[in-house]
Length: 87
Image 1 (cartoon, rainbow, N blue to C red):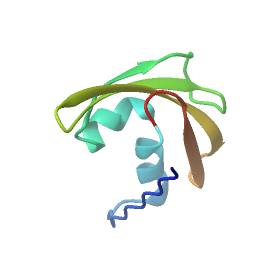
Image 2: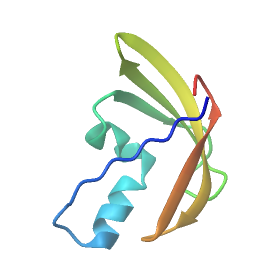
Image 3: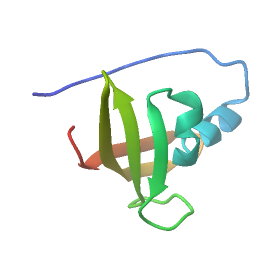
């Protein structure tokens, strides 16, 4: 089953600042309340191929999953895809 999710919000900050913050997986706990912990599986800095494990609470359950960076163009494009987990 395919799942597509789209969310939007307008932030009154320079695009580069917002992009840099949002594209840093270490900040995920600050902007996504369900994510409780972030663990890098590969060394930093973030590059295509980087893998990051997230622990989240959702509907009373703890979920753990790993994302892999598939595309990275700072300030323009950031794509992660599930590498391991329930999604």
